[in-house]
Image (cartoon, rainbow, N blue to C red):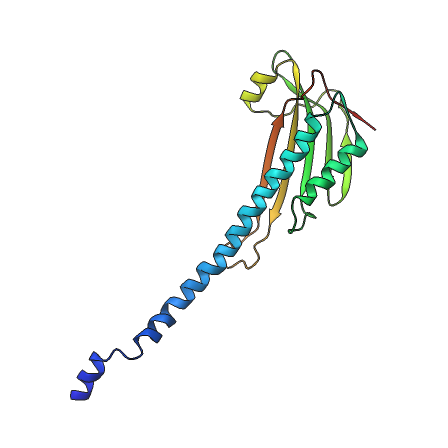
Length: 184
């Protein structure tokens, strides 16, 4: 009986038991923080890539050359370093906003997996969704809409168990008066 009382009062081994209980939780928090921090970093990089391309196009004086636009897309893909830019989809759309506030696509260029494509103005013109605030500012002018998207795959999948689609868009007014045309 006295041995049982001594065993109940003994503190030897308590630290090892506590460590064994808390270790899986600490490991899950650590691994989860790696996935979450990577997700946040990539989301910021997607935002920067969309902003960089849109800003460069908006700085064009009346026209942007197709070869320059391809270079802008490739340069924006470099923003993703050290992460892969292979799955980044970039889209730049020149949107005309008429005096009534109706936005239509003037031209659109896409860059995905190293492939560049352009869509000119369609007949009848295709509508484009702009925020109401942007329409109010841009009546009778052009807006450059830059979009970037990426599907994030968690490294470990322990805390974030599925792929997450990241999407960012930016809107720019041309720096110079008038429209910006895409020149082949």
